[in-house]
Amino acid sequence: MKVGVPKEIKVHEYRVGLTPGAVREYVAAGHRVMIETNAGAGIGATDDDYRIVGGTILTSAAEVFASSEMIVKVKEPQPSEWCQLRENQILFTYLHLAPDPDQAKGLLKSGCTAIAYETVTDPHGGLPLLAPMSEVAGRLAIEAAGSALKRSAGGRGLLIGGVPGVQPARIAVIGGGVVGTHAARMAVGLGAEVTIIDRSIVRLRELDELFEGRARTRFSTIDSVEEEVFAADVVIGAVLVPGASAPKLVRRSMLSSMRKRAVLVDVAIDQGGCFETSHPTTHADPTYEVDGIIHYCVANMPGAVPLTSSQALNNATLPFGLALANKGFTAVLENPHLRAGLNVHRGRLTYEAAAESLGLPFSPIEQAAA
Ligand SMILES: NC(=O)C1=CN([C@@H]2O[C@H](COP(=O)(O)OP(=O)(O)OC[C@H]3O[C@@H](n4cnc5c(N)ncnc54)[C@H](O)[C@@H]3O)[C@@H](O)[C@H]2O)C=CC1
Ligand SMILES: CC(=O)C(=O)O
Ligand SMILES: [Mg+2]
Image (cartoon, rainbow, N blue to C red; front, side, top):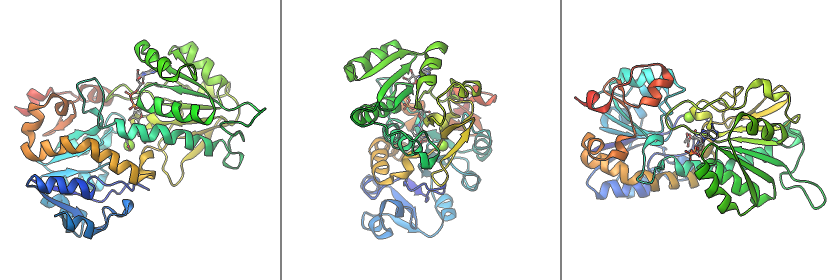
C-alpha cells in the first residue's frame, strides 16, 4: 500500500505520525511510505533519516495526500487537511470527533474511511492507542499545574511538594484511568496530598492497592466532587466516556467556592473538557483565568515532548497500522479492535457515542460498509 505521512500543522505540535523506525517496518513489509519534507524535524529526524530506511520524501502535504492510499497522522485533521481526503482513502490518527462538528462534517463530506486512535480497543477493555499519550499527558499535567501555581503565572504561589514544616499542595484528580493514574503518581512523587475520584469502584480498588495509602480514593458523586474541588489547590480533569463528549463535572457556579488562584488542568479537553469553563488552549498560550481560577486546557499536551511521545505512540500504532497497510479495509472488518476505531466510513458516522454527542445519524458498520 502507498502510505503517506504529512507534517503536523497544529500549533506547537512536534510529533510525527511515523518515526523512521516505523517507516522501516512498513517498508520491510513491502509498503511504499511517502513523507512530507521536514515532517520529522520536531523529533530531530531528517529527510535523510527517512530516505535511509526506504522512505520517499515529497515536498508538500498536497503531494502526500494526493499519492497515498492511507494517511497516518497524529492530531485530528485540520480544515486544510480534511478537504484533501477522498473516498477509498484511509485516515489513521486521533480524531476526537464528539466535540468537533466541523471536523465531523469535513470527514463525512470527504467520503474517507477514518479510524480514530482513541477508540481502538484491546482485549482487556483498554484503549491501547490512547494509553501512551494519556501516560504522557497525565505526567505532564502535574508539571503544567506546578508552573501555573507560580504567582508569576497567576497561581496561588504554592510549591506542589511544600517544604519541611509547610504543607504541600492538595490535588484532586477526577478520573482514575490512565491520565489520572499517571498524574497521581507524579503528584504523590512530589509529595502532594492527592485524592483520586472515579465512578468505577473496581478502579478505585485497584488504585487503593497501587498507591498503598499515598493517595486517597473517593467514589464520584456530586458531593465528593464538590468537597474535593473546593478544598483543592489543583484539580486535574481526567474523565473519559470513550468517543463521547466529557461530562461537565465542575460547573462555573463552583469556581467562586474554590481556593482563590487554584489551578484547573483539563486534560479531557480533547473530548470537550470536564469543566464547564474550559475551552481549548495551545502550548503558545496555555492558560487563562475565569472567576479567579487558572485554567490550563491544552488539547495536545504530548506534542510538547515529541521525542518521548512519537516513540510511545508509534510503538502502539505500529501493529494496527501494518494490518491496515497489509489488508486495507478488510483489516477493519476482520479485527474487532480496529473495528472499534472506525468513526467515519464513506460519508457515514459509524461510532455511536460520537454520533450521539454530535446529534448526527449513526450507521452501524454493516450498513456503512454495504
Ligand atoms: N489533552 C491532551 O493532550 C490529552 C488528553 N487526553 C484525554 O484525557 C482523557 C482521559 O483519558 P484516559 O485516562 O486515557 O481515559 P481512561 O478511560 O483510562 O480513564 C477515564 C476514567 O474516567 C472515569 N470516569 C468516567 N466518568 C466519570 C465520572 N463522571 N466521574 C469520575 N470518573 C469518571 C472512568 O471510570 C475511567 O476510570 C480523555 O479525554 C483523553 O482523550 C489523553 C491524552 C492527551
Ligand atoms: C490524545 C491526544 O489528543 C493527543 O495526544 O494529542
Ligand atoms: Mg485534540
